[in-house]
Length: 415
Ligand SMILES: Nc1ncnc2c1ncn2[C@@H]1O[C@H](COP(=O)(O)OP(=O)(O)O)[C@@H](O)[C@H]1O
Ligand SMILES: [Mg+2]
Image: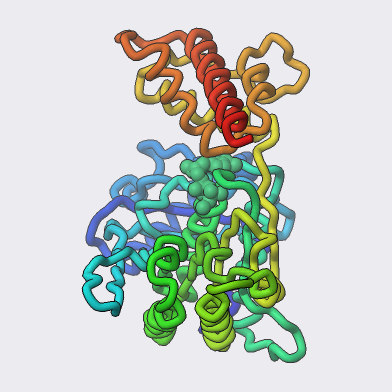
C-alpha cells in the first residue's frame, strides 16, 4: 500500500473530473498531468485558494477531449511548501443498488430496503460537497479527521497505545445536512485516495425502516448486514464507508430501556457493538453515523465515536450563501433574469436578500432549499417570462412567512 499518498494535509488539491467514457485513466494520465502542469505553471497568479478552473481552447488537447471540469479545493490554504496534487477521476454512472430484506416470520412476505450501496465517486453525489454550507472549516476539518484516521490505520498504529476507532458521529436537529455531509465526505475520500484505494464503497444502512418493522429479528439483521460489509472489506484495494443513518434507532440507549422491549432492543445494540468492534480490525473501513437525538444513543456507542460533531442550524452568513446558490441556479436555467447578487455583508441594510436571510434564522437547510419552489408554486406559477430578482426575493419572503405561520399553527396544535 502506498501510504505516502495518504498524507494529504499540506497539498493543494486539484480535482480533475473526466467526462463519461471508456478510455482508461491510466492511458491518458501522464499526458493529462503534463497539460495540467502547463496550465498551472503558466498562470502563476492563479487563484489557488479555490474554485473552478476555466477551460478553453488553450487548455491542451487531452484536457479538451477528456476533462469535464477542474476544481481547486476551496480551503486548501496554500503555503509556500504546498505542492499541487492532482486527483484524476471519472464518476461511476452506476445507480445505487438496494438490498432488500425479507422477514423470517411466517406469512410475512413483505420486504423492506435494508441497505443502499454505491460505488464511489458516484455521479449521484457530484456537487454535493460544494453545496453544503457550514461555518468556516467545519467540513474540511471533518475530512481531515477522516483522512488522518485512515493514515493511522494504514500505518498499523497499535490500537492499545493510540486509540482510533474510525467512527464519526454527526448529530443535531433534522434537516441540517448530516446525512448529505456523510455522503459528501465519503465521495471526497474516494477522490482523494484513489491512488491508495482503487475502489471506494458506500454502504448506507437504513436503520430506521429496518428496525421499525422486525424488531424481534433485528439482532440477526445487523449480523446479516455486516456480513456483506465484511465481504467488501476483504477485497483488496477497497475502502468501505459505512453510513449508519439515525443511529439512535439501532443503538438506542440501553440505560433508558424499560418494560417489554429491552431484550430485543438490547440484542440489537449488542449486535451492533460487536460488529463494530470486529470490523475495526480492518484498516480500510470508516463508520459515519448520524443522529437527530444524540441523547438517546447508547453510551457504549458514543464512547466509541472518535469525533462527535454537532451540526447546527445555519447561521445568517450560511443562509445567505445557500440563497445565493439557489438563485444562481434559477438564473442559470433562465427562470430568473441574470442579475448581480452582492456578496454577504452584514452592514448592507439595502440588501433584500440579507433581510430575508436574517428573517430565516432558525429554519433548517432542508426547508431553505424548498423555499424557491414554494415561492414559485404559491406566488408565481402563472408567470411565463423570466422573473426579476427583486420580485422573486419578495415571493420567497412571502413563502417564508407562510412557512413560519404553518409552523406556529402546528406547534399550537401540539400544545
Ligand atoms: N448547511 C446546509 N447547506 C446546504 N444545504 C443544506 C444544509 N443543511 C441542509 N441542507 C439541505 O437539506 C437537505 C436535507 O439534508 P439531510 O442531509 O437529509 O439532513 P439531515 O440528515 O440532517 O436530516 C439536503 O438537500 C441538504 O442539501
Ligand atoms: Mg438524515
